[in-house]
Image (cartoon, rainbow, N blue to C red; front, side, top):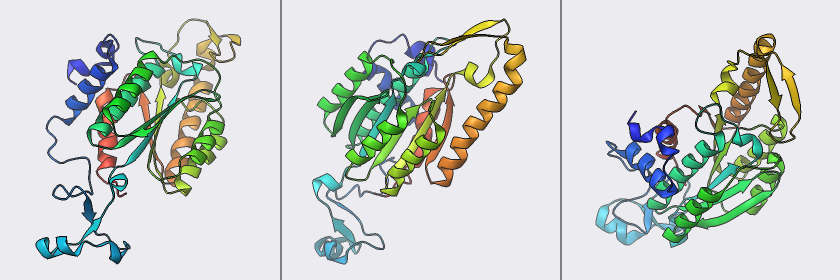
Length: 295
């Protein structure tokens, strides 16, 4: 892993745009195919004909020159709309090492925004806890990228989670299908969250869920007696980790497998990411999916 992509180093860099550029450009080194798959590099206002498209939209002049079928597209149709949804609840502030779940998710959100806008795609950012705290409408402009990155730079996690309510509100708000990118620890009622995410798929959106957890949440490697404190409700409970480890690991595995099974069965991409994982691995997974995108 290139050392400049180490989250420990990225966490010390102040500029969110610089962090995003390092991750994105580091990931793209050596890639020869554009991730903006499905659009013609020769005709910026056209796209290839696909079975099921309306024949009346074929540009016959282009066909006469190329002997290939292309559809006329308006400006607004040529760009993907990507909605980045970032969990800003207090549980995301947890960290057992040098980077919190919220910081990691913010770096990833910044990287996606930087990449997408440089591909001429429109990007929206939502930050939520029990309500939508921030909503930036989708836009392809550099000014929008600056607004998204500045917002991420200044955001802090706080409040309790009401993810399902927020997702339902966003689903009603989003009128045109696009790409939904959820960055969260998914610490909420699984059934309600899964139901809300399925509402995006019902409207033919592509949905990517990045499940971000701290290493200690996954491994529970505490040795001494500790006081467990709920970051959202502030409730405290003294525990002996050795007595609880087996039961905890069983529950966290069940928690993860529920999301993995139910989301993938609904054709929602699910990726579990420990905060120790290199950022470019998460971005590479996105790029692989993006190459298969058909708008």
